[in-house]
Length: 179
Image (cartoon, rainbow, N blue to C red):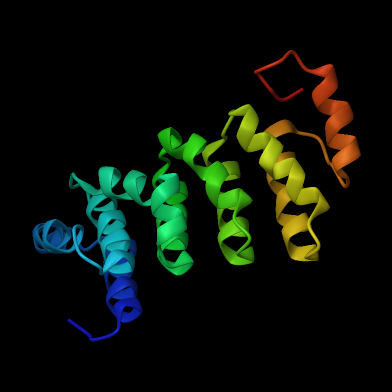
């Protein structure tokens, strides 16, 4: 009930991490009330908590948070919570939606999306291409996260976009598989 959204979000996330299944009903009730309002960061953390604790209804909220129109209209801190949540929950259906977060100019959102794509073992070609574009980023930590994610997904180590392009040209179209 704290006045600050991030305090509420951290509390919900923490309850999920410690496995507070006794709070699932209360968190699910809060999610229903908060997922339609302006308290989007809290709603994303609630969605994670509800799903992590075995409830239902959180996946839809998280996927809606990653929709392109939602990402462009919301605080990137809220979106980062959703991106991290889908990665930790193993929501592979979110892979195509991660591309928008990967292409976003906000560095922390971009890096969180790279980590989620690697965690989810995303095989979407457009996601891989967005990761490869990260190899040309001006910020060294973005390049490092992109290289790490591509290594996880392909088994190869890339340092430059040109290396990736050579790799991609040897692959068969839409399926980028590990060696």
